[in-house]
Image 1 (cartoon, rainbow over the protein chains, first blue to last red):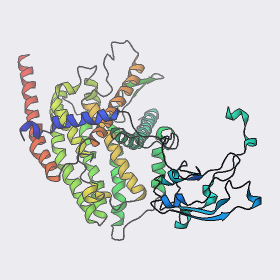
Image 2: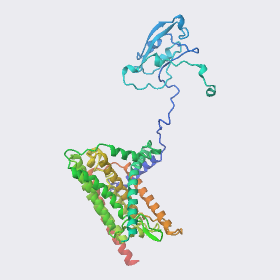
Image 3: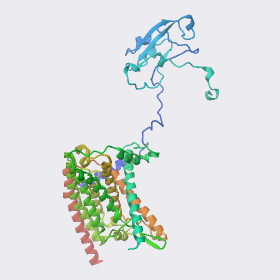
Image 4: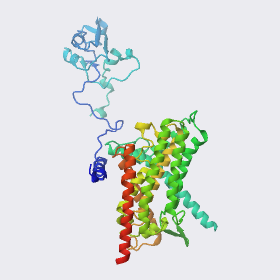
Length: 159
Length: 345
C-alpha cells in the first residue's frame, strides 16, 4: 500500500458513499400485518372439497386422487348413499372418511387434476401450525367447504 | 454570589442535563433506524408512530431485568464502574457554550454553565477519567473477557488522547485561548470557522473522538466477535443500560465539542447581517449548534454502519505511527504559518 492508501481516507469516502446511497433507497420490506402481499393466481394452498350448486358434496370416493397422490397423503373410506341422504351427497357413493395428512402433502395439485368430479381444489390459504402431528391430519370437518346459503346473502354487499 | 445567578445556573444545568439524556436516549433509536435504512430495511417501527416510543420500551426493559452481580466480582467497584462512566459522561458538557446571551427581563443570561478559562483542559481531564469507569467495571467483573476489554479500552484511550491533545494544541495556537466560550465567540459568521484554518487538525481530532467514544471502527473494548461484550460482559439490567447510555452521551458531547471547536458552535452564516435582535440571534444560534451536533451524531452512525472494526495492532499502528506524527507535523505547519503571517503581513 502506498502512503495515500494507508491513510484509508479515499476508501472510507467510497464506503460512506455506498452506505448513504442505500440510506435513500426505496425499502423493499412489506409491512406485513398492515400490508399483505396477494397470492399468485396459480397458488396451490389448502385443499377444499367442493359442493355442487344444491349444496351436495361432489366427491364420489372413486379414489383417483389418492391413487395419483405422489406423497400418499390422502386416505378415504367410501360408503353407499341411503335414500335420506340424497340432499347431502351428489353420487350414490360418497366418502364417509376423507383425510389428508398435511405433513405428507407436497401441494403438487395432482389430486386436483385427477379428480373426475371437480370435487377437490387447492384454493385455500396456508396450512396453519399445530402442536401435535395428529392435528395435521385434516378430516372432512376441515376440508369440506361450508354450505353456500343463497338466502343469507346481503344484496347490497354482493353487487 | 446572588440568588438569581445560582438559580439561573441551576436551571441551565437541569436543562443541559435533560437535553443530553434525551438526546442520548433518542440516539439509540436513531442508531437503529439509520442502521435499518442503510441496510435497506425499516428498523424498529412498532412502538408508537414510526418507533418513536422504542427508547422508552428499551429503558423500561432495562429496569425490569434481573440484576446480577457475579459471585467472584468485587462488589463496590462493580457498582462504581457504570456510575463513574455515566457521571463523567454527563459532567463533560458543563463547559460547552450552547449559545450567546439571552436578555430576560433586563438580565443577561449566558447559555453556558461554566466558562472556565481552562475549558478544554477540563474536558480532557473528564474524558480521561471516563475510561476509569470502563477499567474498573471490566476489572471488577472477574472475567477474562471483561478484563481484556478493559485493558483495550485503557490502552486505546491513552494512545488516542495524545494525537487528540496535539491536534488541540495546533488549534490553541490559532485561537490563543483555552476558554471554550472565547474559542466559539471568535468564530463568528462563516469564514472564521476553525475548520478552514485547521482541516488536518479537525480530521485527527475526529478520528481520536471516534476512538475515545469507543465507536466503530474503534470499538475494540466491547468487540462482540472477540470478547463477547468486552468490559460489560458481566453487566446486566440498568448497569448495562448506564454503560450504553454513557457511550451515547459521550458521543453527544464529542459531537458538541467538534461542532464548537471547529464548526463555529452557535455561529451561523450571516448572523449579524440579517438585522435580528440579540435574543433571536441566540435562539437561532442554539438551533444551529444543535443542527451541527446532530450532523456529527449522524456521521458517527453513518461511519459505524460503513466501516469494519480495526484489528488491535492496526489500531495501535494508526494511533502511534500515523496520527501522532501527523498531529506534530500539523503543529509545526501551524507555527510556521503563524510566524510568517505575523512577520510579513
